[in-house]
Length: 269
Image 1: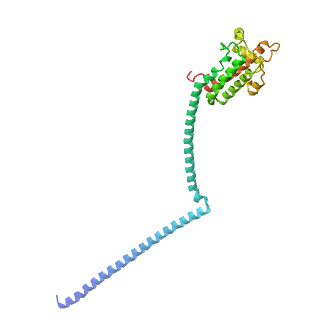
Image 2 (image 1 turned 90 degrees about the vertical axis):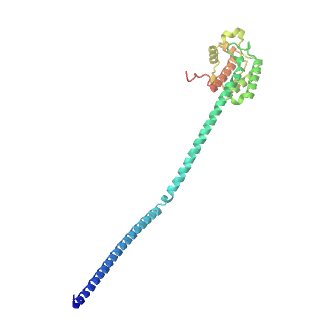
Image 3 (image 1 turned 120 degrees about the horizontal axis):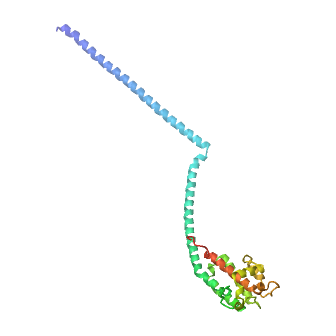
């Protein structure tokens, strides 16, 4: 190659390299501009979402301010629910404990009555309809019966129910009045035994115009021991004081048996 040709070729090479460099720079510039645009767009999107969330939060706060109940209602309901649950738990536990305690007490009282009530019944055996322990009920016998009842009461009277206690005091008061009477209208079992029976005593009560339901404190106080017989009612009035005392003792025994439930048929039968 001649010198002239070499001189003409070298300037062409320099021109090509400069063109490539310019192209690279332009490309990088375009890329940088594009990347900057994308970053700016992403930043704008994040800002927009943040702004939307803040607006939504603000709306909720404004709504709560318009309805003050919503601020404390849920916590208050939680507290109330906790208190109610605690009360129910405590109340149910106390109720179970109380029922258990009372059930045990009722059972022990019932067992004590089964043990001691027969002793009170025995004190009234002088007023038995059949095979009485004495030939006739006298003032002395009424006094002895009243003393026996008193001894039993001051040893065991706390176990009496209200109804049994009332029946006890009615009989005790009647025996006191009978022991102080000048005369008593009672049968002599040696000669009058055939006239004394459960059915006959019930008929005598009708003739004397009273029933077991009529027996109360006022009736006892109004009873006059030793009244003479009236025409047409000789038998009933001849035994009237015995019928009265025997009815009171029957009422007491019936009340005691109700306390013990001793006259009920067992559930298994």
